[in-house]
Image (tube, rainbow, N blue to C red; front, side, top):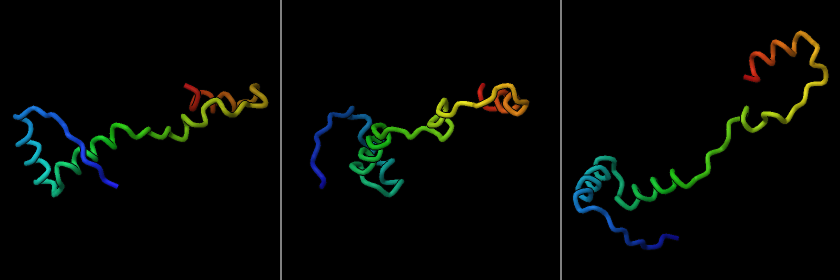
Length: 74
């Protein structure tokens, strides 16, 4: 459901905004909605950030551990 929202915007910005929206084939309302959505949606963490610290190595004395540590745990 769409709802009206009144905004106060610098009068010099309005023509530029309308031209930008028109050149991109969207309405000013859609432009504002898209910009608000971009700034308010929480970004999903990358796979590596999501799982960092979740797995504990069994044996840190293995040569493979040192290679993997140097590559992934910086």
